[in-house]
Amino acid sequence: MKALELRGVEKSFKKRRGEVVRALDSVSLTVGKGEVVGILGPNGSGKSTLVRVISTLVLPDKGEVEVFGVDATRHPKQVQRSMNRVSVEASFFKKLSAMENLLYGAKLYGVTSAEARPRIKEILDNIGFAQKRATEPMEHLSRGMQQKIALARALLTSPVLMLLDEPTTGLDPRSKKDVQAFIRRIREAHDSSILLCTHDMGEAEELCDRVGIMMDGKILALEESEELKRRYATNGRVPTMEETFMAATGYSVEEASAEGD
Ligand code: ADP
Ligand code: MG
Image 1 (tube, rainbow, N blue to C red):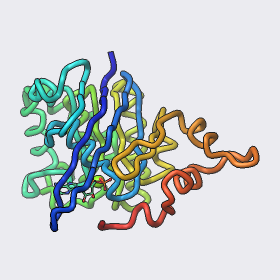
Image 2: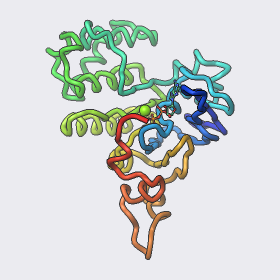
Image 3: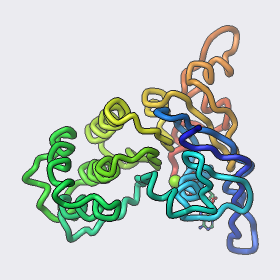
Image 4: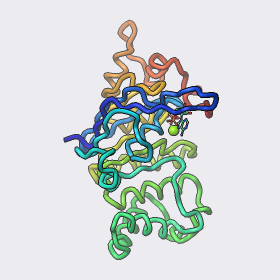
């Protein structure tokens, strides 16, 4: 059984002026147990919609989503409990501290404060988050620190499937490295299955077992990153991930991260 399986998933949105956007166009993919799969795509390619459909926030128009063999449309509650979504716009109670937010998150998953406290301490130590800052309001923390707390919250509930939507976008290089190291540790220590959406080529290549390229709602290719690059080889030279991405999507690295659509 796979951690995640999507078969022919479609989702369209009506935009202003009646224009229709196919955010997901026949998307099929799997994430094996303990596997990290990266989805690399420019802004507007459908990554967040993909994550929202899997996490049951958005209903697909067509197709199936199964999380550990359970149909997400028919059993949303059960599916929600077996995964955690961490997105750029991580939702926190900004006035509450990191500790309070983590305890609250644990409670939602039925973990008591008594159980959660020692684990929170351990996790915070692990990610180099100073304990004394854990009692400050979240709004006083940097984006990098907030993002670490979002990941810590996901970890606390021993997630089986983690959906990471651009976990390092907007972070300074230092925090980015920390968060990436943290993701690497999560997979080693917890054997979590991870779907990581990003427009950062290096991140996808370094952290993921397989990488898919997404463009206009379609997954163009999804395979081990060396294979993916070899697919775009010319004259026997294997391109870099950036070159592969450009060849596949027609986008440059700068265009891929450009805001707005
Ligand atoms: P990404 O996360 O890769 O930047 P998104 O999934 O956010 O891409 O968006 C894919 C496309 O779907 C974009 O054209 C976006 O404008 C559109 N879209 C996403 N969510 C909505 C929505 N709720 N209503 C209308 N259009 C949407
Ligand atoms: Mg997005």
